[in-house]
Structures are given as structure tokens and as C-alpha cells.
Length: 114
Length: 113
Image (cartoon, rainbow over all chains, first blue to last red; front, side):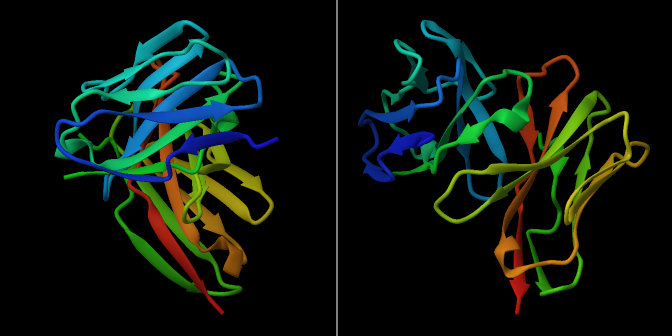
């Protein structure tokens, strides 16, 4: 039981490049989330999903896209990377949308946009 | 607009002593509060929570206190152990947006032997 896994661990992108951050969970959770954490700031919700095929915007969705074709996977897409997207990205999953103590987080992807 | 603030970026404490972490919030519509712990290169993990209808919740060495009138909560760790060295995040949930959390920036705790 690996929990929530994220790849890559670290990536450097040039401005304007695109990439996909991968997230997979093996706990059969319906709910999945993407957060970003900027230096000196708290985590902010980018997108979340309540099940396969259903996604919704969080607090800071601009510049990102998501899809949820399976229960296990919730990739985050950056289409045109900008320096403002330099951050640490955390994926999480849970069995309840409103019981946040049930959220399991992945180890994070550190992204640097230059 | 930072609605949840942890004004102390770091805290150093002797092993065996009490660690007190503080968190202030501005939105009176927050009804549930959580603390998370994060080790380097790992994601946050849930530590303890408290509902706004309570003023204290205890779980082993960890106790969270809530002062609603002051919009302030604190996490007490007694006694502090070397394994408690981590970043601690305070988070709050809004009454009408209960899927979303507002996080503080975190406090790095170092427990000295």
C-alpha cells in the first residue's frame, strides 16, 4: 500500500514549457486534490475531484488543468509555465470531502520555472 | 489575503519541555481547525483537530486550545521529543465552504537534545 505517489520529485522548466505532474493513489479514495505551497505561505487548493470524470476549481486554478479518468490518477497539467508557478505541489486524496483529517498527502513535486 | 496566520516561523525547544505553537485567524465563519505535521521531503500528515464548539482537544502528548473570542488557537506538545522536529501547519475550514481549508504558513519546530 503506497498511499499517494507523485512524480517527478523535482523539475526545472523554462518559461512557456508545459508539463504534467502525476499523482496516483491506491486507497480507492473518491476525492483527490492538488495544492501548491509557495515559499513562506500556506497550502492553497488548485483543483479537486469528487470522482472519476468530475473536477472543480479550487482557490488558485489559473494556469492549470486537471483530468480524472480513473479513480487512481489525478494529473495536473501546466500548459505555459510561468515563474509565478514556481512552487511545491502536493497531491492528496481522501474518502470524505469534508473530513479533511482523512486527507493523505503525497511527498510533493518541487517545480522551478526559469 | 492570509486569513490564517502563524506568526512564529520557527521555534526551538529543549527535549522534555513544552512546545507551544500559535495560530491566529481573521474569519469568524471558520468552524473547524486542524493541525498538520510535515517532515522534510514528505507530505503533511494530520495531527489533531478541534471543532469551534469546543475549547480544548487532547490526544496523547498533543493538546489544541481554541479561544474563539480572540480568534486564536494553540498547539501544546508535552513533553517535546526529537521526533517532533518538523513543520507544523495550522488550517481552518469555513462553515459554508467545508471542502476547502485555509492554511497558515507553518512553524518549524526544532527539539534540542
